[in-house]
Length: 137
Figure 1 (cartoon, rainbow, N blue to C red):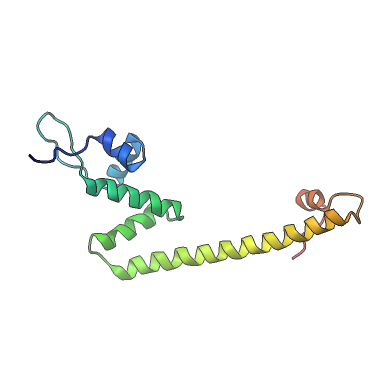
Figure 2: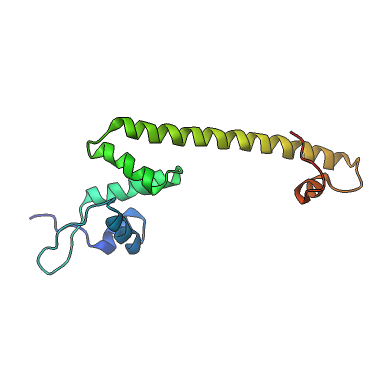
């Protein structure tokens, strides 16, 4: 017996998204819309589930849908150099964000130490966040 495939509702459930997300991904060309079979229902395969999960995971990692489209071209046999370019750009954005987060951690650590020491009449954290005091670097 041939596998009848998944309805759009079941596809969405298995992939962990809503039905409207599936339809949106179809419109964007991120997944291919299957042909209608008898009974006028489209039936999706496990490859659709995997592809949607890939898109969602890439988004969780910070890739935009435009970047995901480029990444999917690798799977579809397209230009690897472009995929590497997109991945490299994302890596640089992550590194910059990590640098900012490390700087923010240092500033907050310093402010917490000042606040705990109680050497000033006002809380240095509130003063810094309020803009009345420059944040240490």
